[in-house]
Length: 350
Figure 1: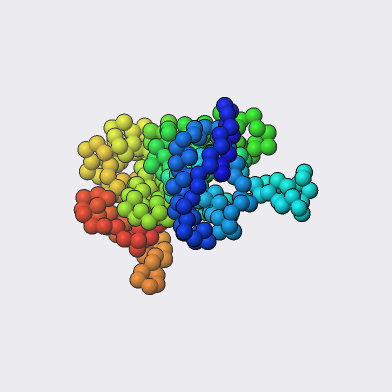
Figure 2 (figure 1 turned 90 degrees about the horizontal axis):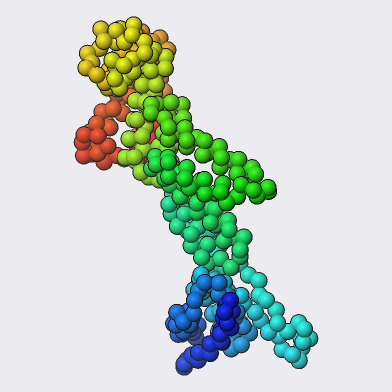
């Protein structure tokens, strides 16, 4: 027997199960789930509470109620389980007792959210959080799951470099929680992220915000096993750092050399590098080393770093390593070739 409580009326459904052996749990689960789905299709799920007496029937039947509840079968309805004591042994005012329990499916869903967040799989985490808003029988979990879903959707768009939509998602949280005093630390963190996203949205050229974001974006894609995306972002970071140095240290605009703010340095670059309008990576590096004699950049390129090599590592100058990455990138599907990008190549680019 299932009793449904909603805002309009109370409905009681009695549906018998035809079982040759009421001890067989698989048969009970099979027939019972079909009957429950039939009943659920007969009522509105909006604001509906399901009250279940788990005391009747065989022990196997009682166990099945817990299995169905834990599986989320009754979602999105709110479900409550009660047990009724024998009046011979239990006082009248204590006969009905609510069964408090943690849904296994809820806990499994929460664990999946944690797992996906650890792997930076934000869309998958958002989908699981959405599921939790539907199946949880605890209001605080539904509330928290809704917030987690919104944050994860924001981070998913952030990963796609869709900064405007990422900011829009986080602003929904501020609109909902701004006056909640015990969450001010969380709210301030969200506001700081919105400010960063605004900086990223409004920036037309490489800056500290954008370059830092690309680095961590590449790192997350590496954890997601998206190695082609990792290589693409790392190469964009390398290129962007050269552009940033040319623009901010020397007043040379790498995307349109004629619009450079420092005309003297512009002339040095034009005299030292063959360029029509835009500086490529190799020409930007040449401009810094040769035309502008950037001692800081020259020293940087000559530094040796340890890079993965087979089962171990090897030392290589940064200049040589960047050239290797450039060749690999150009031959891969990221640029002009069709070669796939392996984990080893993506790791090398870091």
